[in-house]
Length: 97
Image 1 (spheres, rainbow, N blue to C red):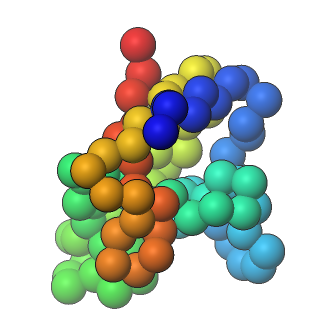
Image 2 (image 1 turned 45 degrees about the vertical axis):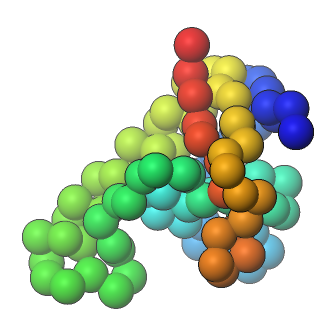
C-alpha cells in the first residue's frame, strides 16, 4: 500500500466532540477526514485516563505537539506490518522529510 501524503490543506485542531473529522485526540492518535489514525511505534502519555497529574500534564503537551507537527506541512502516513491496531484504528508511521 502506498504512503498517503498530506499537504498544508489538512488543518488539524484538538478534538472537542463529535463529529471528529480532522483533529488530534492525544499525542499518538488523530482523525484524518473521518478516519481514526494511530501513530505506530509511539505511546504518548494518557490525558483522559492518566495515572497521575504528571502524566496528564505530559499527555497534554504531547497532544499539543502532535497538532503543531501535523500543521507544519507535508507528512507521510506510511503503512506498517499491519493495517489496523486492536481497536480498529488505522496504524501508520508518520514521517516528515
